[in-house]
Amino acid sequence: MSKKINTIHTGTEGELFVKHHIVQNYPEYNVYVPLIDQQGCDLIIERRKKEFLRVQVKTITDMKTETAIEVRLHKYVNKDIIDIVAVYYPKKSIVCFVPYNNEASINLALKPSRNNQSKNRRFFYTFMEFPYE
Image (cartoon, helix red, strand yellow):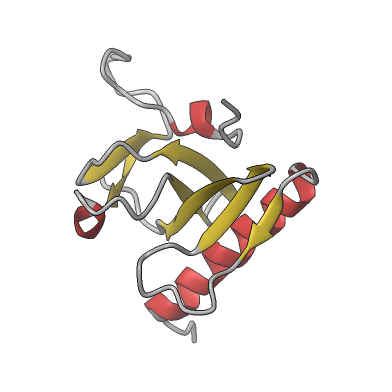
């Protein structure tokens, strides 16, 4: 009998995966965790001295279409509380880091579309490196 995992468990799994990924792959960065994340920021990453990025982690367990996932971000629009959306997809154990541009949702393709259209599609795999600037 499989147990249904609740959203808090799923979110915690995503946050732990993202923290581990950043610490392992970007040892030059400092990772801070807010004591209370009521503002919507799960992690704070110090890229350079006095340069901090606010990261919101989203764990997406199901695809929206046959080829893409959707990340809903309605509650972050026009609030200036996050800089990066870390998207964790546990079915493949992968994470990407999408710069947040005040969108209500982000669609990320995991597979090519049936007609191979790539214009105006954002692919998950193009955001797998933490943004450098």
